[in-house]
Amino acid sequence: MIEASVANGEVLVSACGALAAWTRPESTGRSPQDTWLVQRPGSREKIDWNSPNNLPMDPETFGMLLEDALAALAGKPKLVVTDRMLGADPAYGLTVRTVAPKALTALFTDNMFRPAPAAGGPSSRFAGQGYTLLALPDDKLDPKRYAGRLRVDPTLGGTSTMAVALDVDHRVGIVYGSAYCGSIKKMMFTAMNFLLPQSGVLSLHASANEGPDGKTALLLGLSGTGKTTLSADPRRRLLGDDEHGWSDQGIFNLENGCYAKLIRLNPEKEPEIHDACFHSADWREHGSIIENALMFPNGTFDLDDTRLTPNSRGSFPLSAMRNVKTPPVGRHPATILFLTADANGVLPPVARLTPEQAMLWFLMGYTSKLEGTERGVREPQTAFSRFFGSPFMPLKPQFYADLLGRKLKQHGTRVFLVNTGWSGGPFGVGKRMDIQLTRTIVEAALSGALDEVPVRVDPRFHLAVPQRCPGIPDPAVLQPRGTWADPAAYDRRADRLAQEFLAHFGKNYGGQRIEPGIAAVCPGR
Image (tube, helix red, strand yellow):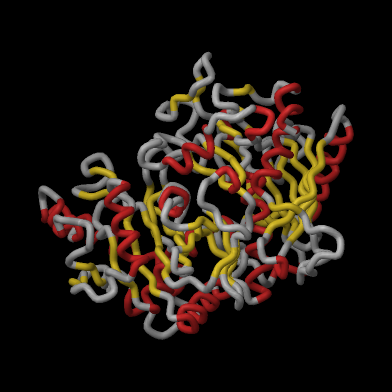
């Protein structure tokens, strides 16, 4: 696959041996407005069609899309097919066959999805329910044929030429016109998030690792909040950086690799990710894909350059990292961290959450949407993405929230909120939390060192904020109001965010069945 990608001119070989690839400007990130779920009777009542992320596509339009995809594939001189699997726990493995005209697409699925089970291996409860994924990254749909069926794209002056559509009833996915590799990965993650909760497994947009004592941790957060960076800890074994399931037996990775953000990647502060992407090796054996990063003529990269996109990515198999657990499965998590990149600069660096607060923040999924992950996002925007991954969680919210609440109580899991965003002021005034400060806080939370320290309860957000943290000599950084030059400006900004919480909760969950006590801990009350 590597040799074919090079021979076909799909990539260039960089100085370190990694494969460098670039996409069209409209394919440098996910395109939520072009991402669809087919609405059929079998799944209609399970999917939350009230979510703006679950765009319904009628079966007739999907049939047209499938017809066009098959015709386009039939016209290619060569196709590449991979048979892989999602789910490190064989009891929940889901097979996926990917068909594409590009060797690079096949290599990406080889990096990110797991080896398919050998004949006669352990049976999965999803046996016989495998998916077929058709990927046409460089083709475009005929806008006249799809007028009135797909969205109107202002940049094109007419109907969009891109569609990323998933049919969970017929188990078919089509990526047409999106060359962003993440479209393939996230499509199959969505398929797993549809299946797993219906089998009693909580699917999570989270990284996971394991300490020397065998205790595991989950780190939940949207792209750009630090899931990959913070889970890559040389003192802990990595299970995975993005997608996991929590079953009655414990946690397990869904993937085989990492798809890490590279913008401003610092080799001194993030050596594991840097070395996995850029280690020196024979290019025929390297396997890492560097997507949309600036490369100089000598084959080296400038990871600070954002002119094409701030969403440059590195895809590599987990085996490229030094401290990975094989197989990537672990015990029930002892600790869960909710990561939020608060661009308002008002949340504390860390806070302890009660089970009711944990369910609330899981439902709310507050963060600031960061530049580059989606098309058109250039500055941080306030976002409520439930379960810290709403675009990939198609079922109605109770499927996920009820499972989390039950598992937290059953296993006594501790939960912390960790702000990896801004301090000393909002975006443009304050500064982003230093990664070393956040690593120190994470280490203290995972070790139990924050369990008994005195706390101050924030009256707006009802958060128990530690008054000290081992390894942080100046405890003043733990209290965000004191880091602002103008405390009154902090109060105004914090009041505004608290009211945004209250309004969002009332609009989305006020009339739903909510566990007693959750509404009472909503910020702003």
